[in-house]
Each structure stands twice: as structure tokens, then as C-alpha cells.
Length: 126
Image 1 (cartoon, rainbow, N blue to C red):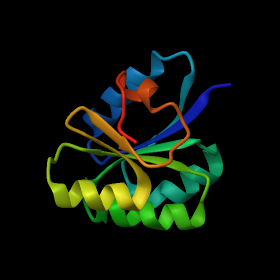
Image 2: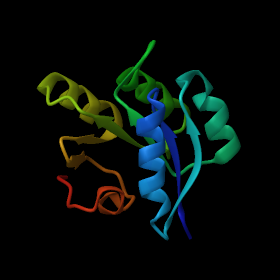
Image 3: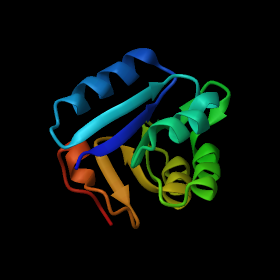
Image 4: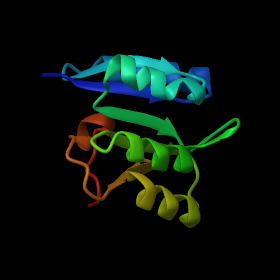
């Protein structure tokens, strides 16, 4: 069974690049990509992803706050927050909000049960 992934990023080139990388993995299926986080609830309801991979900062949206809301509405959903920022405040807030944070080539997780090493080809910290 494939892991269904929903990608959320307001930068189209980043979104398409991540999609292309993940599509080469036989056990992952990118079920949808969205550039506007306003449509995330509809995309989750329609596509039933196992994992959402989301940017930490998007125009008009805070990925950390959005993650908190998603976890309240979809407690079984796994969320990985992507960040290019190496800022302890972002990392800590993301970690406590969503379980998984990817920054500077590292993936930190608290309790996520999906195979995070598959997403980025490396070990993660638990």
C-alpha cells in the first residue's frame, strides 16, 4: 500500500520539484498539490492523504498555526513542515505543533509513525 502525500507550498517551482522527487518513489503517491492553503481542508477531504508536506511560511498563512488547526480536525493526519530557516524559534514551534520538521536537510520527529526516511533519504531524530 502506498503512502498518500498532499503537498502544500505557495512557491510553484518548489512544489513541482518536491512532487517530481516523490513521484520516483514506488511506495509514495502524491495525491494532490496545492499552492493556496485556503483549499487544504477540501484537498484533505477529497484525497484522504496519510501525510501532508507543508511549507512553514506561505503568503497570508503561518504553516505552524495551520498545522495546529489541521491536527485538531484530522488527528490521525501526519504533517511534515518544510523550512529553509535555521531559526530555533521556528524549529521549536514547528516541532511542538506538528510532530515532524524538515530543515537544513534534517528531519526531526516526535511520534510520527510514517517512514520519514523515505521522504528525504536520511535518518531522522526522534
